Length: 554
Image (cartoon, rainbow, N blue to C red; front, side, top):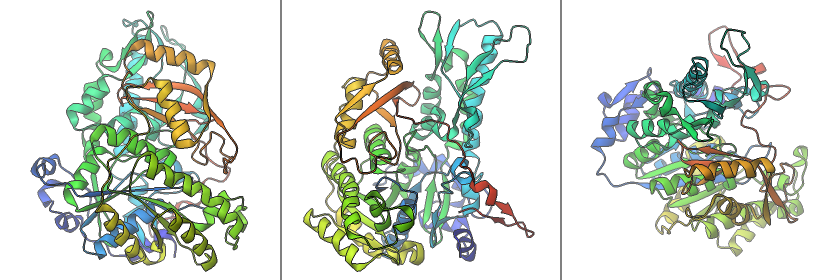
């Protein structure tokens, strides 16, 4: 059976029953049918004095076309912890429609380690991402309406972009204002995918509605004739934007196929955004469960770095343990195996590919000072000889290894991992960061590039140098963290450089001030914030059958 058929084969509990398991009363829920709900603010207040549970971050090696199953392992781990009577809760991101209809597919796990209802979560869910899209584009409309109506603010340069939650490369650069109406001023514009928009980042980093409104108000939408920043508050846009996002600020509650309570909220990409679910969802989950399993997108050089350097720094939240997920197939791919040959036993290529895993483990252990466990998402084709090679290498470095079979066995396939995680959580370490907030922007970027990626240096394009001076001139970003937008496939800025065994530098092509999110985005290499569809998009296989059932989502 495929993922969608497996999900439908399991009888879900009423969401009120799931909520009751973690102490949420039915009148504290806003129901979206039988199996989805939003959690009201009253729960935060009621549980504010309760001790936080332990936090486990699930990350991975650099992803490959084979798929490593990071979210699947995270879900299976939470189920495995509950099988060990540890009262575990999941805290995950919401899927974007872009990958669902593109090439990557959904983001609700796989096999018997899924969150459900998977079709709803992967599609419109409770409308959060639509609300973010609307708030983003309301601000765009108010900017162009202001310019059309006389431009009292003397806006000379607009930096704010429109957004849509689909992969549509044609929108990377567009011309607007071509209607020919009197007073209409045409200009170049562009779209970001919604999950890369600043509004998404703001929602995920806001403590409450008051903080949300504050952050929205300080969005820099462009610059005036005196080269001074113009803010969303100058357009009086923050109030209406907050209204659109009021319900979207409430975390969503669903369940795994084994009925583990799952708080799913916010969905920024990790290669072009900061890659973590909302701080409200994580804070809430820590009050609801004794153990909370969360994940950060793509490899640990992206999602985990941003989780630790941005989210943890902002909130004071600290992981008690970090799980780094890989497959033997993906390690061989990083060692040079072709996609079609990754099932075949090849110890020599495995040894080469293990270096990618060890680089991530070294970062997590020695740069960030966290407790690390390696989880191998095991396949039937994995040989005992290859497993022994990896096991011996990790034993040399005193890194725990767990073989998981969560796709086929659900939580039962993660019981060993659950035991190792519980043990690791008993010895919490003091988190370190990869750079100091007091450093200047260039130094912060160079610190990540050298300490995390292993680059020998950083080059800044002429455009990036101009933008850096523009940002520094505002005086707004002095103590902001940086969010590097980089290819997920490599530590370098070259997606094809899997080994990174030769010295490399990275190139910063542009810089953007995200004043509402309170970080600076540095775009590296050929990264774009509006993905395109592949030649044969997943959308071609998604359909609805004669009985009204959705088919083709994976």
